[in-house]
Image: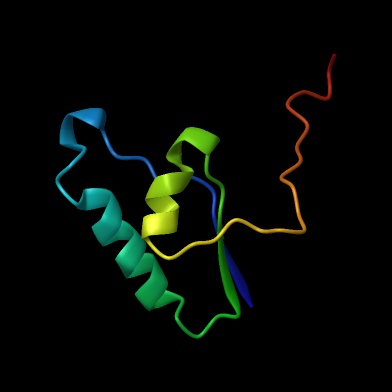
Length: 70
């Protein structure tokens, strides 16, 4: 099984209080028996997830459609 974390948001007023790290740790513990936990991270936030143990994939790229009504 794979777990997919689409967004993890912490109010900027509370950045630096380990809230995000605590949430990631809880996610990792809850899904510890899964094959993979995937997270979508913007490039400027990727360092946070890397510090939490996530690694960028070498062989995939995120892809999406923002609107089907263009």
